[in-house]
Amino acid sequence: MADRLLLSVDIGSTYTKAGLFLADGEDLRLVGRAARPTTVDDLGLGFAEVRSAALAGRPGVRPEDVPVYWSSSARGGLKIAAVGLTPDLTLSVARMAAASAGGKVVRAFSYELADDDLAGLRAVDPDIILFTGGTDGGNTRVILHNAARLAEAALPAVILYAGNGKVRDRVVDILRGRDVVTAANVMPEVNVIDIEPARDVIRRVFLERIVDGKGLSSVVAATGGGPLPTPLAVFELVRTIGERVPDWEDFALIDMGGATTDFYSHTEAFHGGDSVLLRGLREPKLKRTVEGDLGLRISAEALVRSEAAFLEARLAADGSDLDDLRRYAADVSRATEFLPAADRGRRLDATLAAACVRAASLRHAGVLQRVFTPQGGFQVQRGKDLRRVARLVGSGGYLSGAADSALLLEACAPGADDPDTRHLVPEAPACYADAEYLIPLVGNLATDFPAAAARAAVAGLRPLSSRAN
Image 1: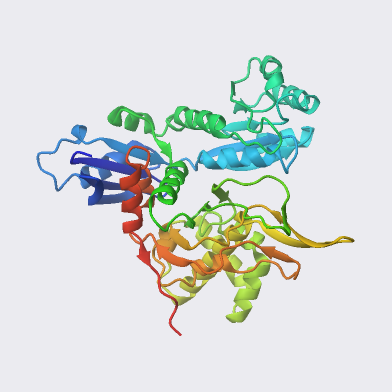
Image 2 (image 1 turned 120 degrees about the vertical axis):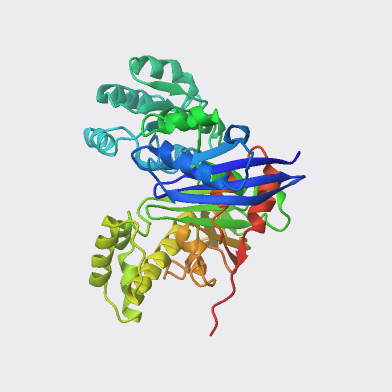
């Protein structure tokens, strides 16, 4: 890798960040950075500001001579509604495809679409409807019914059909006049997953739609290329770290923000054994989930509602009550850039953050359940086993500043009181903070410089010690 400068920019909902890297031999070295509040009315202005600031210490370097790699989540990410046949098979695969492409599944529907389902689709106003169902040569009745209902609904979303290939032409014909694209079936055979073609189409739609308005077309013109979805950049970085950095094959990353908490894991999903049966799909080694009700600011009120039982118990132990937290969540959800200066606000933020980490881990992880039959007892696993995760990384504004491992270790908390049910969360991982918040910036470089990006990302992490007693 010849020595040269590379600029990486991430346009987020709150801040636009830039990192200037020197490709030095086989390594990437950070040599400059800048950050500015995102200019929401014209995202191109903030991009131009951080580009100039990052290059300010390089006299004689022309901006147009420095390649730019950029990502964006400034419009809230790509909203995807999943329509599938059954929740435990094709609909699960549709969610995997959406999450791995950097999208956010805002609603999911199974079986035959009814009038209230169409009303739900209109309410969430998705960018893409990921329409799946049936193995190749399998069910057709429900698929053709749902195609007719989607045609009737006349929604503005792109409809991506990635279901039973035997009726693909009929589905396209039924949806004639709508914005329709197709990809190979996400599950061509029972328990056989093929999400890569759908991922490629989702990314293409992102590129087409994200640059529409708010000044991003000027960034495309200035850089000569379109953005990655920020979650996709991080997803590919997690892949390269797991594949290329020694002793990092089994790790997880939690990226917690004001609106969502993303959980990424790189570890084998199922380890088997004579007494363990896997029910449902075997999940991929690399997995992302995104939780839209887990966030410290925009989603704070939704977080208090969804995790009320945990929060009430945690607050009672601290001598506080849930009503106080509800008032705080309502305030910060309206003032999303608020940073507490007083101890009360810091304590409440820490409580909200603990709920985000714990809930994201429990939702990402699978479950092991003891089942008894006349032939004896055995265990059934559903979902992904995270017990071999040896390293856990915290990123995002709040987790990047963690003082010790206590907050990240909330991801290891058991989630069930039932002695016959066990959540397969990490057991005793070493914890790290993305202290310089470089993960999204290095992620932009992971496709073209995978080994160097993986090393740079790990080198920038700060090990977290256990909390002192």
